[in-house]
Image (cartoon, rainbow, N blue to C red; front, side, top):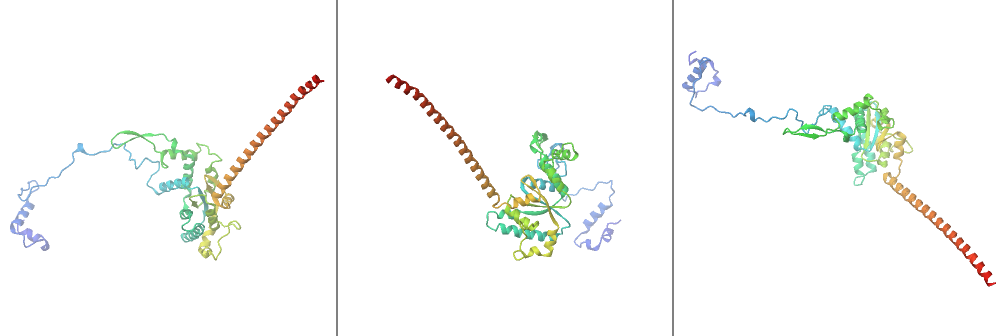
Length: 354
């Protein structure tokens, strides 16, 4: 190909009039060189040199290194089920009052209406600015995954993290140290749950899980309170599970939204099956008994203090009465003995004088 044919082969838009013939000739000459012929060196600019890391200086981690922020787990830690399991175990350990409801085809609109009425009822008990306003703000009604919640109950009751033995792990410097992997997704927690589920470990009949497991059937929703407050519990029962006369539903004048068809349809699909209060299982009657406590926990504490004081006063009076009776008995006996000793002496003196 002659040098002048390169200009004809290139598109007109890529050919600039400023390009002189020498540059075109040099470019065409490079294109016509065979592959085995080395390209001639140019004096325009020196070739660039890039720095490369030496193989010996490359940073490499130990093959058995375990990051502290990602300990080994028995289940994938980044899945939604694992995160739900961790949230349920944290909820069971930190929440003293949990009510369990069965719900049947509860739609999102109905659930929103039920939450609205529940929030209004709790706000009436704890107005803004009061000491108990935080209790109403932290109350929550949520739908749970039944099987994952069942596993969380087993972990909370049958898994003791303090009994997990330490194991060795390699640090980033290659040093072996003792660490304890006792989180809820660890292999130790998985083995504890597997032992109960497979029957290797007997299930105590008086355990919380044995009592609450029959309730874990079907779609479930839970209502949680951050503390055991009978006043807030009564307000929640009057909305979610009304039972007059103890827990009557709100009046239509006070809560017109409660009688909305959507809210009523959602409330009819909720069924209270039981609850967990302070680590103990209660049925519906037991939950209602807690809701009937007047004055709340403070009233119960005052009654307990009064009972202890009255019992102490009664014990003190009983001990004092026994001591007084013993003292009186000894004093009377001493007086009798003194009179007996004086009697013979006086009789002997009378005989001598006669």
